Image (tube, rainbow, N blue to C red; front, side, top):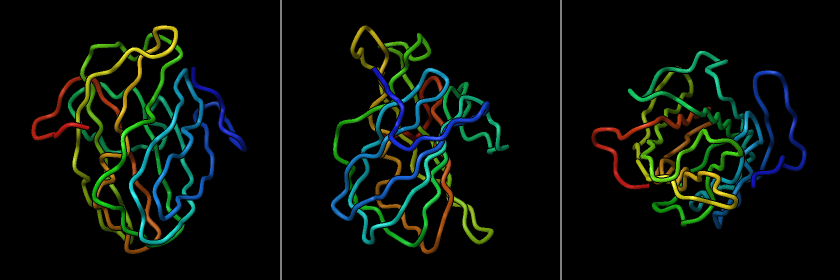
Length: 173
């Protein structure tokens, strides 16, 4: 079951937490919001940076629509500085729903887009089949996969959207 992150702040439209991404890679807490929470496992990073993770179940910040499926979760990741992500996020972690919003056995896609200095970069999407977690809660693993090989040449904001269904050209998470 997902729990609130230490130091998390919550508003009516989203929840945020600031985490440090360490060079060895690891996991960061996903803020508990709208019945979702958990962890994102990320690959190594060339330089340790702080990341402000902001979770929402609605497009409260006018993010672009990245996929054709219905978005169930938005995760904004604001990095404090330049870094490069390693080639492979380790397995583990996952987005957990405390409600029936994630259906075990259903396919979900994770899409991402980064923006910095007026530039937009689409990250490589992935798709996965939700597993059944504790107490039958649905779990979507592999969120960090879309960060594989991504380069942040300066402070950057990235949006990850979790959408229902598969996505053409998406590899496995």
